[in-house]
Amino acid sequence: MPAESAIPAASYVSAAIPPNSIDHFVLMMTAHDQRPVVAASLTLGKVIGNITAQVGEPEIQQLKLNWWLEEIQMIEGDRPRHPLTVDLSNTVTHKQWLAPLHALVIGTLGDVGQPPLRTLADCLNFCHNTAERQALVATVLPQCDELALTNARAMGVGISLTEAIRDLPNPDSRIPVKGLSTETGFAGAAELAEIAKKHFGAVESGPREQIHAQLSVYLQSRLYERLLARLQTHDYNPDKTSMHAIASLWQAWREARRLIQ
Image: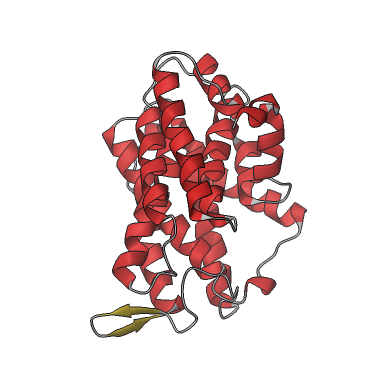
C-alpha cells in the first residue's frame, strides 16, 4: 500500500465519515481535544472493514490485511507508515489501541472469501469480530479499563447487528433474506433486533464518570440504538429511516446530554 501513504489522513476521515452519518454527529458531540483521535480510530476501523466489503479477489484482500499486520509491527517499533496510524502514534501516548486493531485485522482475515452468513452463531461470531472497532475507539479515550472495553465490545455487537439488519434488503447483504438458521428455525430481522437491544444495554451499565470520559463510544451506541428503533417502527425498511440533518443533530445533542447528566 505504498501509494496510500501519500493520502492525507483527513481524506480518509472525510470518506469514512460523511456528513449526516451517525459517526459525523458523534464527532460533533466529542470534546474538541479528543476529536482527532476519535476520528482517526473510527476511520481506521472502517478502513479495515472495507477491505472485505469491497468486491475483489480474496488473494488481494488477504494481501492488504497482511500489510496491516506488518503495519502493527511497524507501529510497535515506532515506525508507522499509514497516515491514520501516524496520527494516532503521534497523539496517543500509549499503544493499547494496537490490541483491538490486531484483533480486528485477524477477524477480518478470517472472513476473507467466506460465503454469506448462514447461521445465527456465524453471524454473532462475525459481529463480535467487527465489535473490535468500538474497542479501538475506547482505547484512545480516557478511563479505558477492562469494563470500558467489555462495554465497548458489547455495544459494538449491537451496532454490527443493526448494520446487518439495515442492509437486509440489499442483495449483497451478508444475511439471507429469509434469515439465519438456528436450532429451532430461522432468526430474521425481528429476532436479530432483540439480540441487538440486549447488547445495547451496556450503555446503562457503565459508571457515570466512565460514560463521561468515553462519551464518543457510548453516544455512537445510543444513536445506533435509535436507528434500530426506527427500523423496527418502519418494518425494517431502511428507506424510511433517514432523518433531516437538523433532526439528527438535535437527536445527537439530546442523547449526549442524557449520557452526561
